[in-house]
Length: 626
Image (tube, rainbow, N blue to C red; front, side):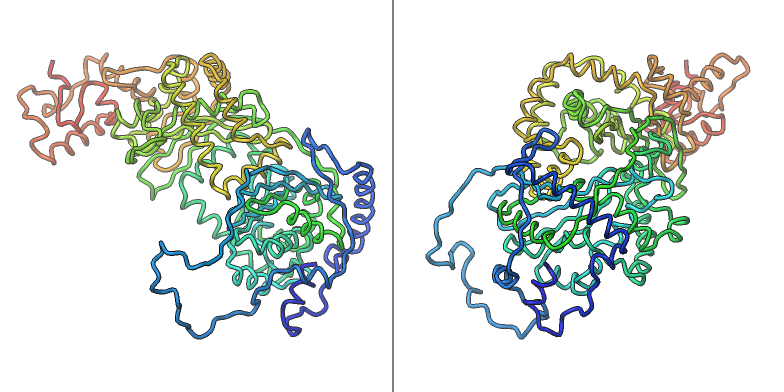
């Protein structure tokens, strides 16, 4: 349908001649399977009388119908397909202040309360929309596919599909696709996640008819031309470079791969740079899409669009074509393994530490208590501006960031999937401080057995405020609705979620915290890892009370060093560090460096020395002065 619409709007010379049919796109055999499967699905849907219930949610059924193309073309919004630009013309409103309206006879707005509406096409594609009467629409096509569903033979194909998005389709060349997006001022892309893929576009709402069919074309009939696929090979390297440049995202990726070792949610998000290129072909991508990209596994979400209009144009996109069949596939449950991974980065002076635990996922009764627990812990960077809702009174701000200037950042994380998830703490500091960073994290995790009514109430109010604020962002709302439908088949509104938050008690938080900490931790260290404690220290530290020194916590390595030094009668410290007559180290910057080097020479880290009572950063030295 889109090809006919754009052909009618553009000059005849712009028509792509000899556009391939769906059979040529997918192959004759695949087309026959497609056709027979779709007929069966359509027959099953049409037995209903205008309504269909999917996973507990009621949908209005949108039936396919044949229409006269000439009449449909009249409804297509006009735009200059080949607009390049012209001579500059004077703006007659240039000198008019912004507080003076330039439009006359503007009708009064007809304000309506936003309402979430649900429909389903005969082929099984679900459609959800919310019209907030905004001028900018956000459209998203979500597919229940991703790296967790990849078999070893399909490694990296989700990422490859992302790389070839918005290229040539059966009716639009890559150039015409990009030109359409450019002329209409759209903004969007494709993102491959672990259990969903999202095609999204942001545009002026009047161009929804063009944008909706454009997105569907990328999923229904991509051409996957060899030269276009080959040109996308370089995108894999770029994606890895972007991931490495974003330290937080890279640590999250390491955490997932470690927590679910070689299975489902532990599959890499990005295609492997070494092995991928050999399998990065149009045939492999096409076969992957045939297996996973069925209409029944798809959800189309529109924000600031008219629901009936959206359904009408999506119906027209599929009316003349057969959707990809809903072929059976294996969907194994995630197997949480826990474990640890240390990855050294010689160019990074800081140490990034993440300690995570498995949750039961989005569909668990623990979802809301776990989310409240994350908000209660809060956290952020060592340099952050305050203000309402910034979490400056959360535990990690009060107990960690405000008390430990050596901590660069510390925050709680909570990542949920349909049947599993990860909750934990992420802390960053200089590499030599790694032992103390781990002890700080363990200490805060041990405190999750006690909560005050004030901090629980503050966390609940903060969480509800964040939920309602995020719901005002159309793009965030669009992605949230799509992910919820993919994960659970239904949408929990902000009002419903807020009511569940209010019902959380201190007992609920203690119960869920105890359940989390019983599981084996996942321990990831990235950056300067030379001083990082071993996994066994983290595991045993969670099982019992963390060791504490005179001025804070100590690591297992430092405890052994210090205990051995304190018990040894042969141990002698340098005179510069033991003499009570020695002037304070603060008198010279070189003395501070010399004292630190001496401590390292005798097998002591700065943290270990601080445990003995020496704090070189505060320019005091009391070792051996007793």
